Image 1 (cartoon, one colour):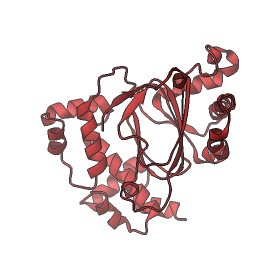
Image 2 (spheres, helix red, strand yellow):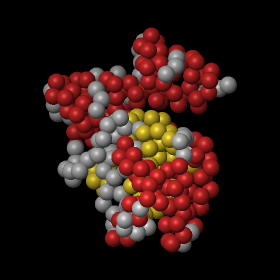
Image 3 (cartoon, rainbow, N blue to C red):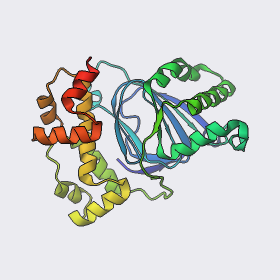
Image 4 (tube, rainbow, N blue to C red):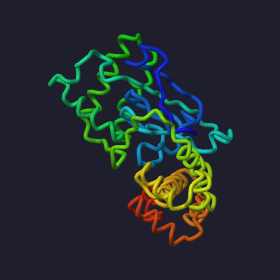
Length: 287
């Protein structure tokens, strides 16, 4: 898994590119590109990384990612192992700022869209109700002619720019402007994503990055804006929230499944990240 700069295959794709994906993971690498990306998950679940944000995604997840902002959607491991009967369906729209014409969004009539595009440098997540409202339009865009697709995208951005049901994801501007891939961060992120339920130590990940523990801590903080421990806890807790929602497991069982050896520490981390205790969270979502 590499942090890579993705480039479009043709000049036309630099302005607008549309795809519908039905395979796990969406991408194998934490990556960024020069285009904006509007991504809608119709089916499947997993964890998404956008800048320094770590969150779980479910069907209906709708996110706008700005140019050069590192991101990655990873499906739940069961999708890769063939243990899930559910299908995967994700619509991905990539576009440049001038997809409808140069200078269009500099006009006062499109001020709200211009503001939304500016906010996308942090990643913008839209509420589940917005995804439901736009579900048919997002899935139906595949069937339209090229001209109709551009018009549909413009209308989608207009509606998204006017909603208040949205939030910024990354806490800082983490856009990457270098084409030099970070092999070390790449290997570490993949290791954490694949082994979060195991007893991962700072020494383990430092060795993967071929660094001393002190150097690794400085490196990881600079690249992700979070400490290694904080990042690992977020990955574990986001997976715990998914298990509490999807499976008939007790809080104690979930605690150990996601890699905690102490129920007290699990409760502490869960409340800090999710804003409630695991028990309260489970009661709320199952009500």
